[in-house]
Length: 293
Ligand SMILES: NC(=O)c1ccc[n+]([C@@H]2O[C@H](COP(=O)([O-])OP(=O)(O)OC[C@H]3O[C@@H](n4cnc5c(N)ncnc54)[C@H](OP(=O)(O)O)[C@@H]3O)[C@@H](O)[C@H]2O)c1
Image (cartoon, rainbow, N blue to C red; front, top):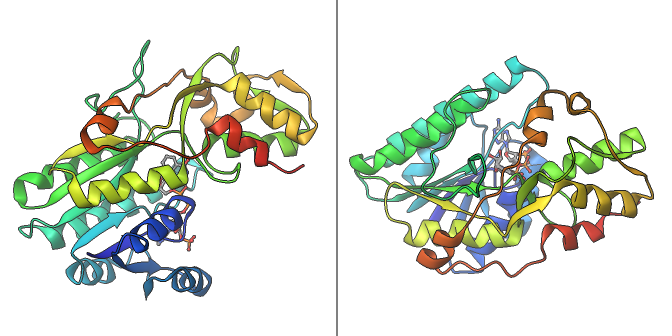
């Protein structure tokens, strides 16, 4: 397939581009800077310059493609207003991509996080949160999945809190950055809360499988580790950085504090069984051994 991708230069997207190219697909990638374009072209993709706000560019990219994978997100958590703007920008972009594919039966694969359900691992059948600061992302994913009834083979790959590669990425990457800044590898609560994780190279395989096979309107869990205790994550980070490992107040993590404190394991049993997806790359705790002091 000729695949149009947004976010192809990111941690997840660069793995997806490599996965697509190594399985016989061709890639046209949205690139918002010359450095991102150069990285994508070096990887073997063609590029089109533009950003998520350029809806005509998105529509033109989708029009040329046999399928679309959407991954770009501004990831701006600096203020509630910045986050709301990023969510609104993504929502409009996804609607434009979906609109272009309406009636074509072509695949549109988008991304979200895994939901969290009190007391058990979330499954693919559990709903995404539609309220709160990132509720808008859930609503735009649901709108994309609803395009199943309008001739789009839409699907969503739900990523866990940490998508990692070479010890970097996701919530664990944020903990590492905070530990470097504070001189302490801190964790909120008692540290027994669990975060799911996946290696980016394993997640990339699931994006390809969803593109190739997922029925319209379906959601999938790219979960390699069902849940790693946050204290165990902080312990590896502290050892690699030569820093003490301590419980710290939830407020230390700012607006992310309540999310960091939550127990949020997730299962991928259905995804593995239905799509034949099997993670083969290192677990988060093993990959964190790549952190350099
Ligand atoms: N990493 C994780 O642990 C994780 C967990 C759950 C969900 N996710 C979601 O998965 C997706 C990919 O994550 P990631 O970790 O790969 O993110 P990332 O490394 O921050 O990459 C973001 C990608 O989006 C592009 N981008 C950002 N804003 C853009 C804009 N306004 N216009 C055009 N392109 C824009 C970036 O382009 P440049 O390269 O030019 O900056 C980059 O290609 C995101 O939706 C993220 O929220 C990630």
